[in-house]
Image (cartoon, rainbow, N blue to C red):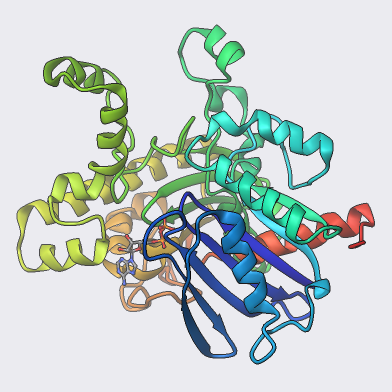
Length: 403
Ligand code: ADP
């Protein structure tokens, strides 16, 4: 079976075609600067790379170009688009409507449209991707895999805020959590590597990328996660502030005469590691400056690691112990410095890493010391594979085939 996985952002489409017999990637790429000048598609297949400069006024055109590349006479990886058995779409927000991956049909599509406003920066583009595929690949099953659905198992005390209750009823204000596909994937993968059922483990998974979140997993289910109503809450991130006193934006808005939109932009795009260091949102740049002795870069990394540690402590408490700590995503997979800063002086919680084993980038590996009570692992995330697996699982369960 061959599955096309699509991840549509505001100005980009990331894609992969996977052959699910061996779960190998046949082609992958990125259409970028959609709707802007200088749009292009970077297409990778069989160890080759093609860059196509092409006008991409909208997502539909981008997906059309991608599909044409996949069936290109000379170096296409498919003979015909009919070889695509199903499409798996990453959808950021499924609200309280979607507890699991869902097939697109008239009813679920209508319900998805009702969730559009929950993630105005993401869901409209995910929907545009679905619209494009419905028209360009008619008869091919489309599956939506949500970032939020893994967290739908959180108990009410974890997902409700101490705000007027009618805000929840009227506006659905609550914690949803994100990166669910990644937390789900690494929790299953690490259980497989350890050789224990995930249901028997207490896990904390740290997805540390430009966006970062941390999840407590018990019995295979998400019981709490750091991102909230939006992906702004929780850990310090590349450009996002994470947890702050909610009074601060109100005070600054009044003092500086700033609109809600401007404040939103500052909290999302000018804060975090970039805001503190004044250097960059890229951890590589900040780590380099910190090594050269820049005090603000050093401080930014300290604050980042401190916040992760604080969450580990909190989740340890609510899980009632811990078996496995997992690091994933860009920083979690590739930054030995951050992993070391997070794990140091945690022996009292049974967490001890082996500093030599920790000196790797992007490898699947156990990095805890032999005498560490808690196992610590690096598990490179693979959201595309997870989406493709979910897509197959669902269409097989429903007995659906392309028409
Ligand atoms: P997102 O999907 O949220 O954009 P990623 O998971 O791709 O994020 O992670 C991107 C982040 O990973 C960037 O901030 C980058 O600085 C960081 N990163 C990538 N490689 C390294 C590295 N070798 N050392 C430290 N940080 C790294």
